[in-house]
Each structure stands twice: as structure tokens, then as C-alpha cells.
Image (cartoon, rainbow, N blue to C red; front, side):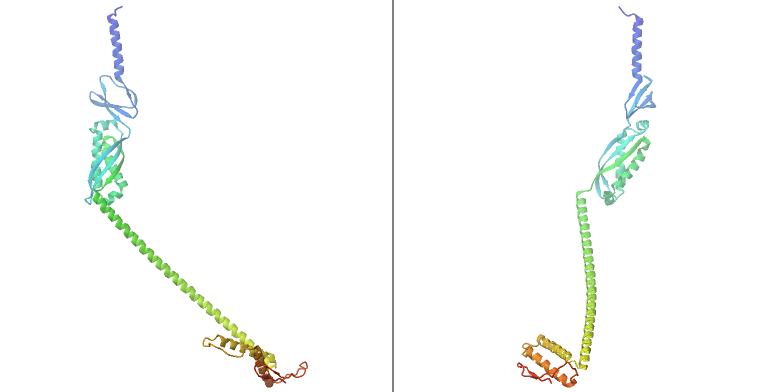
Length: 331
């Protein structure tokens, strides 16, 4: 059955409505923002999800990535404040916060950010000495972040991080730095060695001082004890002499015999141990010593006389000592 004109018009109308709906419905993926332009002028921003626009009047302008992105900064030559040439590269992280400004305030956003970062790297690193440049990367990163973020703020961009990846001085400069570092380490080693030697000498001197003090104290203590011993020995000898004297005074012959025998044996010992005597010839028999003591006792009796004693018995006769030829006559 052929279609009438009205039916064809309805079908065309339905198709046009479907096309209009498809043209006016826009689905925005997560992490992106689209700008809407009406007759070439920005009107609003489409956010992630389902959005409607006026078909054939509004159109999608710029599609902006709102996620954090990485910008690789290539290697470039930098002249430091002390005229040293170094090669440096970096990496920057940025995020679009305002899609309209990023789309319409700057043309070719990535190129603009790249050139801005490179220029500020040369400015910041060129204002520092080489030693400061090599040892203060954190300070360089902070300064770069502050300067680049401030410059990119009108574009609706947030610079989250700027990191210097590598700094390469020339080879001859690296060799000079290595020699300087070696010299500094040798200097520190010599200083430490000198300090160690000085401390060792001080400790040895302190040890010798303490040893001398202890030795002096020991000598003093030994002398004190030796003097004390001599004093006690003298006291003992004085007491013994006093006792012998008292015994002699009371007529005790045995006491004087003991005293003379003791002195006699001490004299013999002194003669035997003298260094200047090589050969000693003397009568050493016990009978000679006894005979001598007997003679000395007889002399003492003659001097002091016999003490009256009923228990003494009859007077003893003298006896002959064969070995010496001496006689010991006692009444």
C-alpha cells in the first residue's frame, strides 16, 4: 500500500526530532570539562555526565582535561652566577582548575607552560653559585614552583610540583670538583690524625703523672712503714737490753750468757755476709762457742759475786774444752 503524503511528513518529522535530540544531548566523560559556544561566544561549561545544549545554535568548544598532567622539560644549558655552564632538565606537574580560562586565555596551553618553566629554570638557577646549585635542589624546586605557579595562575592552571631531574656540570669541572673533594678529605684526615696524636700524648702524660704520683705515695708509705718497723725494733731491742741489764744487776748469769751469745752469732753472720771478705777462717765448732760463753759467764760471776741461794748445791768445778784449749773455771 503506497504511503500518503501525510504519512511521509510524519516520518520525516519523527526523524528530524530524533536527530535534534541526538544533536542536543552531550555526554561528558569523567575528568573532562567541555565549553559551550553560542555563535562563537563562550556561554557555559559542561561537566561530567549527561548535558543538554540547544541544537544547531550551541556547539561544544574546547575539551579540557581536568586531571593532573605531566610536562617533561627537556635538557637546557644554564650559566650559573659564578659563570659555570651546567645542563639541567626537569619535570612539571599541573592541573586545569578553570576550563574557560585555560581554553580562552592562552593559545596552546602545553607549549606555553613548557616555555614558562624553561625560562624560570634559567632565571632561578642562573642566580645561584655552582656549589649552591648542586647542594640545594629542594630550595630550587620550591622557588620554581612558586614562580611558575604565580605566572600560570591567570590561565586557570595550578602547578602542583616542579622537580629538577638532573644537573650535569662539564667533565673538566667534575674532575676539578673531585680533586677539591679529595684534598678536603685528606685535610680532614690529617687534622683528625693530629688531634688523635695530641690526645694520645695528653693521655700518656696524664698516665705518667698518675704513675709518678702513685709511686711517690708508695715510696712515702714504704718509708713510713720502714721507719715504724725500725722504731718498733729499736723499742724491742731497748726493752730486751733493759731486761738483760736488770737480770745482770740481779745476778742472773744465764741472762748475760744469752745476751753475749746472741751478739756473738750476729757478729759471725755479719762477717760471713760481708762483700769484701772472700775467705773466712775461724773456729766455728759449737764447743768453742760454748767454752767462750762459759768463760764470759765466769768473769761475770767474779764481778757480781755469787747470789746466796740454798738450792744451788755444792760449787761446780771447772771443765776443760778440748777444741779451744781454754779452761772454764767456776767455783
